[in-house]
Amino acid sequence: MMIKRKIASLFVIILAFLLQTTVFKGLELAGVVPQLMLVATVSYAYLRGRTSGLLIGFLCGLMLDMYGGTVIGLYAFIFMTIGFAVGFCQKFYFTNNLVLPAILIVSGDFVYGIYYYITEFLMRGKLYIGFYMLHVVLPEVIYTGIVGILAYRLIVALENLLNKKRKEEESAGNFT
Image 1 (tube, helix red, strand yellow):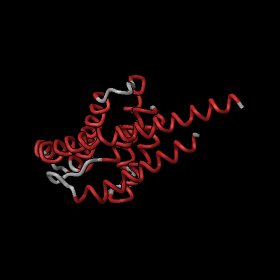
Image 2 (cartoon, rainbow, N blue to C red):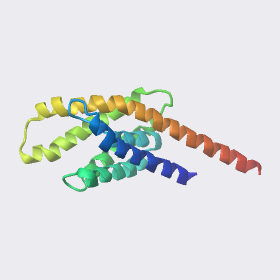
Image 3 (spheres, rainbow, N blue to C red):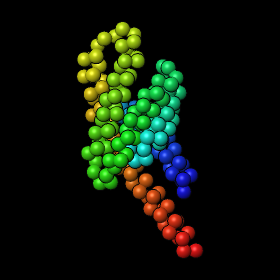
Image 4 (cartoon, rainbow, N blue to C red):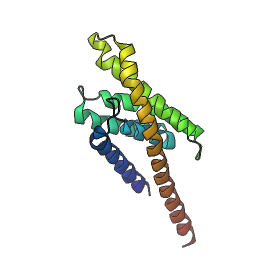
């Protein structure tokens, strides 16, 4: 059953990558697209814990690095850090409450924006943080938050389905 969970996670990551880099490029709002890879990282970190957050964050970040990163490993580092930090919130997991996942998705995207500003702009002497926050980070955080809640609900539904099947297999195995 563990293999099914890994395959499902990989499927979600690939789907998020394809949607983020193709479909949502055509649905840009205010010049930004939602960070679905970050949503996948935050969702799995919240649902499964620090180790999954770290590994899935690395995989998502590395895929984005290979797709169009300026420095290989930058996205991987940012997403790993966010995934690991969000993984600490797993002990606060509530199945029907969307407030904490929404806060984690929005704050994760905000942290991503800060990291990205520091590494891509501040290190090059571009000090327009107010402009960057208002015109890039804020619209992206809002867009990612809205789309992220929908994506999170789908990931939770998939996880519940996999957990239900696992419990059925375990109970069937006990009686045979």
